[in-house]
Image (tube, rainbow, N blue to C red; front, top):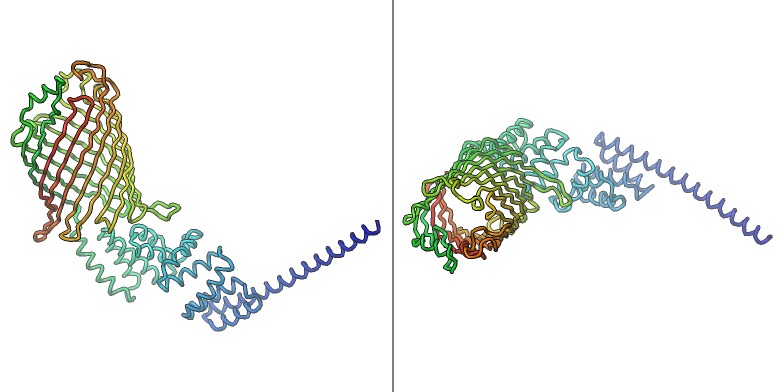
Length: 535
């Protein structure tokens, strides 16, 4: 018991000593903190009165008391910036950043310092940290907008410039001026000119006045050339090895009958197309267009297969920026409504209504992804005397993504995509579900600017019902299965004649449909050369 008591007494004595020590240290710390606060407050007062040397003396006194005072280091950096001593400011702010990494004010001032040194790689993450904490911080929109402008992200730069809260007219003018440059780079001359004119109004006598005025004149000329109406006329000649789409030789009686009916299969011909478009809405965020496409093909030896199509289209798109874990990503969301009316041999053949909403996301300057949905309503004419199973009137639904890899600012690209589609036809012989693989690319040659392209559209179709008419010797026994790769190889060259723009093109198409029902087994080769005038 005596030993136990002795030990207990020593323990109590130690506890009292420790508590007293902690209390003493707390008092000392409080006194030190209070002393540092007094020095910093005096420094802030001197700074606001532009007595920078007095402010430095107060801050040096504070740091002698506590060398790790983040507040003293922060204001020391601010004062050195005011004295135009960036090296001393950087040393103070970087030490404050090390002591308190989450301090947003320190991050902001250090970001500005790096920005003024044109070290944008270091400045951007610090400024973004400050933006995340307070997007309305003065001049932050300008700094980040300028960085985005330098990176070529003009749409995001415009948003940041316009959201900027300027500290004075100088920063307001800078934001307007660079917003005008970014908008001009996006192709909106009228809107860009308005931004430049506003920048000139804010400070008519600033150093930016002269370059802004010259740029405004350039934009004025571009505004005059900016047209809401545009068009494209294409004329060409072609050679088609299988105009009526005759199947390969086969023992199947239906196939033999088709081949007997169309002994002439090849034909050269001419084509003409005219595209007209009018942009009725054009802003940074929205664009609306109505257009009309006319296409006529003429087969010199098989005129009953001449085609003509009239295709008016209404489109509306929304452009913007979507925040993500990888930064702000530009996007385009839009929809197209198209009506297509086609004749075959001067007789009505088909009409279609097509609705195509889509969403395009620009992940980086080299990666663009589009997700598309398409609905088609097909109405074939003159099918009253056709057996019900062969009526091709249908509703078609398609959905799928397409990704494009861009190189050298789009001079070269690769694309890969997948689509799933379903055809719900009135005639059961035409109902199917399918998969489509899309591959392709383009390369622009370093000489003459010739563009070489290749596209593959590989469509697998799986029909839902056993065919009621084929094969002729065993009807209602087979479901049609098709594999149709369509290859398109081409070369194109742009050139100017006077003030007019033209494109010369040479294209080769190979369509090779493989089907388990021989009446649908065929191939077709088409070579086309054309010249296009854009106006």
